[in-house]
Length: 239
Image 1 (spheres, rainbow, N blue to C red):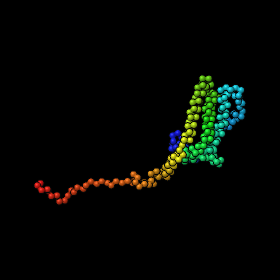
Image 2 (cartoon, rainbow, N blue to C red):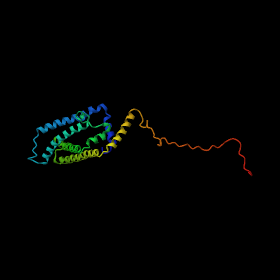
Image 3 (tube, rainbow, N blue to C red):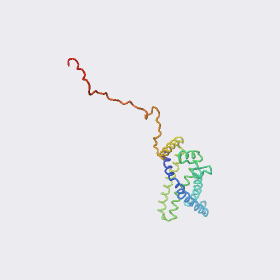
Image 4 (tube, rainbow, N blue to C red):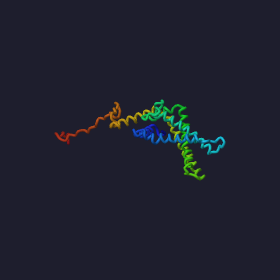
């Protein structure tokens, strides 16, 4: 999004060029894995016994935040899908238009309350992911020594900062979009795409206006004709 409406629209067009394959890909690689993760997460939360109130250690705080941000992220993702994805259309959502990607998303995110909720959801999701990488490495025995845990901790923090900055930057970019200008760019791109799909050049059908460079003509200059035959001209007197 930070690269501009045209770049964002081209990325959306590339994704939607999958056509009928897009829906099974979404379910196979996005929705079903997230649902599985959510079910496992809620089972862990239901069976967990947080004691951060009695033992306010850093590990306990992170344990509690991991569970809390997981629940926030789950609600946020459901709300995000309802807001923008076509699956949310029966519930009054589905406001994202793939042919007008930037402008439709910007209109949805324009209310201040919506942007604030998105910021909370983004930061919660990023913390849950980056902190989850650290705990995953411990659970799976990838880093077991204190030194390895410290290094992994810094890596997780760096990943979280980068993802959080990218997410908030995209949110800020959407809020700063000139909707009318973005829609004009999207309309031009959609027109070109339709022409190319129909086998027509984008320049076909272009009607130049009077006075434009396309219709200006210049009278060709011709060289004077020099006679090569005929009667000789009289010589001047005294020649």
